[in-house]
Image (tube, rainbow, N blue to C red; front, side, top):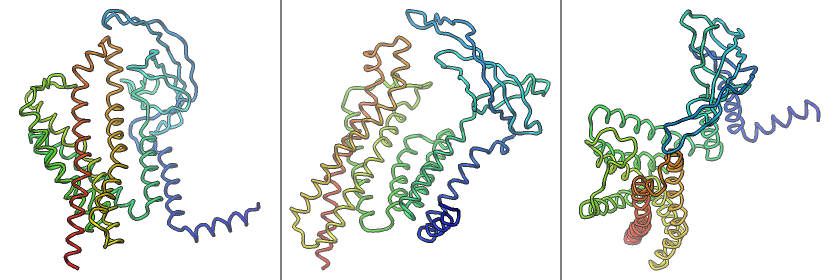
Length: 379
């Protein structure tokens, strides 16, 4: 195949899919920039071009529960090429130590990029490694996420991306307000109202099924919170001291309640939107459908998504717990102790989210049926 044939095919593809082609070109240029953005940093960045590794010694940790742990320590001699600053292109030799577990150190390989700190005299000879440069890969994944959303969903993808960024910005802003002294429970109550409005209105658009889904979401949240508050009031007292990373006891109950409030918000919106949109389309295309058939159709849709959503919730909590459980078990804490102290909080969040999913199904069907009956009366 000659150059002219390739050029003609590219031109034909561009004429057929102009937006997709432009989007792909922007994505490729973004990847190239992210892989070569060293000039944007004031901190010196070096690239490892040669590595020599040798075992240095054997370390023994005597502070690990009932028995010591022995692991090997390695010393690397690195040849590093500077990629930015006025000393770009300079070649220096550095040392890097790491242990076999790499708990508080990292093994470097050829091609890795590292942040450097100059020595006290400002020279490269006495510079040290601050850390490995990983931000390029993080932004590449972000760029790939945005590219696929825009490529597969078109204009809708713009609103999905905007929704995600807005929700993330609002969440970060709420953490700032919490650091300024605003109660976290008050912030959580505001967020569970703001997040659904932004997500559903921007992602799904302003239409009747969206408002039905919003109503279903808020009604489900209200009923489930009343049930949860009832259980906290009349159930056994919770020992919040077992929560991880707690340094003070002034608002432990509010922190836990706020985490429970936000835990199942995403799946509630998913269930509500799936049901309300499907039932709205069913009512629109078959306006003469019997109420019983309408309920049965909604129930069948609910059955199909119920198991999937509950398992999504389960796997989310399992993935979040796994590193912490393994770390505690490695530090000689028995699994039974972890289950008694750590797992109950996650089980509570999981069960609460599952109950919200189960409540969202009949509530969405009921509100959709009321909306359908209202349309019939108008006709």
